Structures are given as C-alpha cells and as structure tokens.
Image (cartoon, rainbow, N blue to C red; front, top):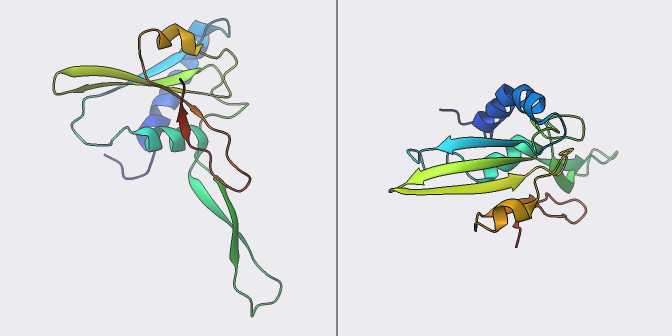
Amino acid sequence: MSITPGKRIRGKVSDSVSQIKSRAQYRFPGLLVVYEEGLLPRHVDEYQIRVAMFGFESVVFAVPIDPRQSPYSVGRRYGRGRKMTPEHSTSISAIGILSARSGNIGLTIYHNPHAKIPLSPEIVGKYGIPQFKLAVAPTGEIAQWERIA
C-alpha cells in the first residue's frame, strides 16, 4: 500500500498504455479498468484517479522583491505526477473503476480529456453507469470532476 496519492493508478496507466495503444490503434476508444475489491476504503477514489491522471494539486506562490513582504498564493494548479496530457496516454479514453462491495458490483468511468478517440458517454450511459469528466475551473483554481448527465 502506498500513501502517495494516485500512485496505484499511475502504475496501472504505465503498465497498460502500450497494450491499449496497440489494441485500439487510435481507431477505437481505449478503456483501462482497475478492479477495487473494497478492502481498503477510498483506496481508488475520485481524488486518486484525478491526481494520477492530471498531477498533484499544487499551490502557486508569488515572492515579492521586498523581503519584508511575505510570499502569497496566486492560484492553484495541477503539478507533477500526471499521466494524462495532450502528448501522453492519449490512447486511454477513460479509466474505469470496477468495484465489488458487500456483494454489489459497480463500474464508474472517468474520462480522459486528452484522448485521441474519446469514449462516447452515450455508449455506457444507457446502462446507468456513473461517468465523470473534468470540469472547467476558474482561473487559478483546480478543476474537479463533474458528473456527466
């Protein structure tokens, strides 16, 4: 078990990206599905997925020239550790979390906005599968997941 946010998911992306790329061949959506048995609560939650895909949440500070003035926050952004960029992991259209808890099986899908071939929400939406995309964030803020209706 790791205490580094998103480490498990980043590892799964690294392990699977070449296989998904070769199978999808940029003609089909590629879906990485990670199985979570539910032994550890929140081991693969929406935060873990988000920081694995887009990077650690970082605070940007301004440092005044005058040393008597304190540094101050000018915004937040995603930082290092991202696996999904316009140049990387573009064959993965989405990450699905398959979970089994108390005899119930569920799937939740998190879409990659950088995918060359996006997974159409309508394909799985008709089955009532929860799906999320990254919302547009105000300037200086960190984008959060928003549910696709």
